[in-house]
Structures are given as C-alpha cells and as structure tokens.
Amino acid sequence: MKGTAMLETIARPEASLELMLDLQPEEALEWKAQVNQQYKDWEDVESATHLVALIQGTRRDGEWLVVQTKGSNSQPIGRYAQAMNTGSGFQVEVAQICRGVARNWRIGLGAAADEAGNRPFRGVSASQNLTLAGTSEVMVSWLNGHGLPLGYGAALHVYG
Image (cartoon, rainbow, N blue to C red; front, side, top):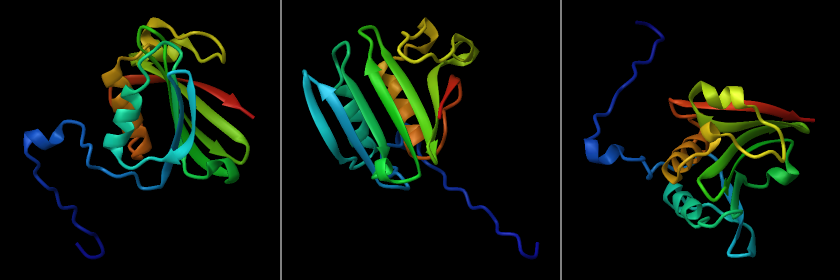
C-alpha cells in the first residue's frame, strides 16, 4: 500500500492497564486547589499519578481542584478540568476555551447526565455525582487528550 503507514500495536500485560498512570500529558498542565480551608495557587502537574493524588486530597465537602493548560489564563486557547467534593461524591466539569468562549461540560454517568443539564451554581443530579475512582478516570483521560471514557455523559453550558 503505497503512501499508507501501518499502525503497529503493542501488547500490554493486564497489570499495566490499570489506569495507565505512566502516561504523560501532551501539554504542560498546572493546578490550584482549596483544601483544608487553605488556597493553593498555580503549580505544575508532574504526572497522571500526581493528578490522582491531588484529586484524592480533596476529601471534604466543598474542597475543589482545577487543572488547566499551563498559562491558559494568558492564552486564547486552552482547556481545563475541575472537581469539587460534594460531600457524597464529586462534581466534575471539563472545558475547552477558545477566544473568550468556554464550552463547559458537566460530567456524569450515561445519558442521564446529559439530560440533567448544566446550570451554573446549581447542585449536581445523582447521575452527575461521581465517585473518587470515576473522577480520577475522567480527569486523567480528559487531560491526557483522550476525551471522556466510555459510559460517561456530559451536559454542555457555553460561557461567552
């Protein structure tokens, strides 16, 4: 086949497929959070393992974490993911920002999460209240550029 590159596959042992935490983001990421009533300003995300540890650090109701493209506050294009502990799970939102318009998706399980909507300053529905494992899975996948994992839904809200 002239001009067509063949795709090579690599067989991975089952043990290495857990969360694939060794994957590194394609772009530099930074995080900030409010944990233990202390605000932490922007710092670099070192790896997916570091990201999961940051999510695990938001243990109390109302604690939150934001991870974004490094320097996106001063760039016209970027993306972010945020998680807030709701006391019974996590509210997770992911977004793309392009020239002053933010497309923000509130994440949940299945089609019910789509139908639940995404209204700012409103609580999450039961389908949009993720577990710690679900929050980690969604944020690692999104920030590694893989989109949402299968089985998750999203309700869009556009800020302009």
